[in-house]
Every structure is written in structure tokens, then in C-alpha cells.
Image (cartoon, rainbow over all chains, first blue to last red; front, side, top):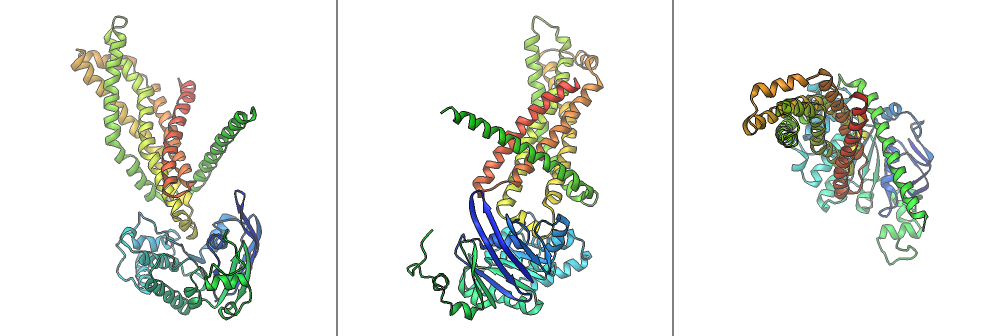
Length: 249
Length: 257
């Protein structure tokens, strides 16, 4: 379980998170929605310790991660996989080296096992046999799937997805959504998915939270969110800019 | 009215101190991560190849012409005052002490320092540094440490090449254009030769190598603002390296010679 407790974060003088609190249950597929720039990705980066909050705490399976040593944080990170918005593949490495980098550096498996596991993960994301290709040769959808294979390679307990369908055509977005569902079913991993794509949110999520002005203003199931009376939630899920009361920032 | 220039000066001083502090901190992190240098030897060797072997042609050309021009200029300045029989000694001394290490460091700052800043800067703005962190891999260990040791070790080696080729360039001009015989030129080189000068120049080269790598890594790892930011970092890395090379050169010259 991940408990995000009263997180505050500012960059220069701009306050992005202002007391965000949220609990993510083990085994859930938890969607975090919210408008662009509301701090969704910033919140996600706090969970994996890429950003440190100005105030507040994050507890992962009973272990508080704010203020811990680098080695302790790295031990936590080995249990968390992350798919970045643009996949963040290492340009200078092949697909195989990208996927295997984590396990190679941590010496988790022997070389033949690594090669076997890379092939397995690529098969899992529907891209068998592309090990020798370079990231520059891949399409947007392929890059995301390779990024996902890399995140899966360390057999994580949690996977964080930062806008997994952004920038993809609807068919490729559907492929990614189905992949997230399949990974969820086959591995039982806890997924935290930041998105503003409501089609994706309804398809893969079994819990949802909405972030607005740096705070979590709603948490519930997809059915709860549909029937929410909160005007901010309703405006976001309907995608109607004309609906009151939200003003354009 | 009066506050503005004072505020500007204060801001610049703070900025310089902040950068100096950041680079010192980065150096201490690199040294701390160097515990794994044997384990990561392949990363270091790969960088040594990029930094050293690939820079060699440029260093050779630069030092050949530097030696040639210093010979020609020295002859012009000696004319009527000093015998040209001292030309070999004077030019070789200038190459060993100053021109070899400093110009090689400048070449490295342009070729390697900027390239480190651009590479790490691109990785930073495309979240590749965050991706490394997310895999529990320290970017300092994986990226900065091998580049630091590669530049630290290879710049003195390149300086040795620069010294030899520089003296050869000076000899070509002296022998072919200034009618100085081979014996006269190299007798003069030998007469002025002191091992202390070579080691002094190499000590400088170690310091310059460390400077170029630290600046490149520091600037690259704090890049922000997309492609424009990467461009800015590339320029900043060269400017900072060049300035620090000259400052280091002065300090070390006063300490060693």
C-alpha cells in the first residue's frame, strides 16, 4: 500500500502540490486524473523519490521514504517500475540494452537469463525480436511498449505510468490500455496511472482520484466518479470547457 | 538607482559561488562513487576511447601548427637580440610548460566538455536521467564517474602527444624556413630541457582534465528547457571550462614554477 500524506511542493515560487493526500491499495489499478499542469506527474515523481516534497510524507508498505538514505531509497525503487511520458529510452543503447540495463547493473541474473527475460518481456508487450533495434528506429507506441518492458524487467510490485496513452493514435492507445490490463491480471502488480484520457481511465482503472489545484479533491471507483456531484469532477470527465464553475488559469 | 548595480554584482557573485559549490559537491560525489571503478571499468575504458583516442587527430593537428607558429614568432622576436641557436630551447620550453597542456585542454573543453554537457543535458531534458534513477542506478556512478576518470587520465596522455608533435612542428619550421640545422635545434632543446618542466606541464594537464569533465557533467546534469537549454549548456560548459583552465593555469604556474 502507498500512503501519500499531505504533500506540498513548490518550484521557485510556484506552488504545485498543496497538501495532496491519497492512499493506493495493494493490487489496485489506481488512476490519477486532473487538468494539464495540476501536478499529476509531480505527484508520481514523489512516489518514486525523484522529487522530494517540501512538506509531507510518503509511506510505501509501511516504510516512510521522505528523508531516507540514498541506498534505502534505491532499495525501494527496485520494487517500483516507471513508464515515462515519452518512454525515456536511452538513445545510445539498443532495445535489448535498454530493457536489461537495470538487471545488468544490479547483477540480478546471469547473461543467458537476461537475454531470455528480455525476449520474454518483449513478447509480453507484443514486440518480439526487436532486441537489436535502436530507440530512434521505433514509433511512439513501440517506444512506450519498450519502456514498459524495461519497467517490468525488475519484476516490480508497483508500476507507475505517466500519461501512457498521450501522443498515440486511438488504436495504439487501446493497445497500451489492453497491455496495462493484461499486465495487471497476469502479474498482480499495483498500477498507478496518471492520465487525462478518460477512455483509458475507465478502461484500466478500478480506483480513481482527481487532482485539482495541488490537492486530491476526489477518490472513488469509476462508478463513483461518474455519479459525483462535484462540479469540477463533472466538468473534467465531460470535457466541457463551457460548464461552470471552472475558470481558465 | 544605486542598488541595481550592487544587486547585480551580488547576484553574479552568488551565482559563481553556487556553481563552485555545486561543482565541489559533484566532485566529492564522483570520488565517493569511484569505489566501484573496478566494477565499472568497461564504462571508464569506453569513455577513455572517446576522450583520448578519438581526440588524438585534432590534438595532433592543433599541436603541430602551434609548434610551427611558435617557432616562427619566436624567430621574429629573437631577430637582432637573441641568437637563433636558442630557438629550439625557447619553443620547446614554451610547449612543455604552457602551450602543450593549455591548448590541449582547450581542444578538450571544446570537443569533450561541450559534448559531455550536450549528452547529459539531452538525457536530462528527455527524462533519461530520471529513468536511470528510477532503475536505482546512480547517474553520478553510471555517467559522471567514467567521464571524470577518462578525462583526468587521458588529458595528460594527449598532452604528451601534443608536446612531442608541437616540438616537431617547431623543428619543421626552424629547419626548413629559418635555416636552423637539426643538430643546433635539438642541442638547444636538450640544453634547456628539465624533467621538472615536463612534470609541471603534466600536473597542469591532470587538473585541466578534471576541470573539463566536472564542468561538462555539472552543466549537463542541471540542464533545463528542452533543445534551447541543451544549446545553452553546451556553450556554458565551454565558456566555464576555458575560464577555469586559465585560472587553474595561473594558480598552478605560480605554485610549480
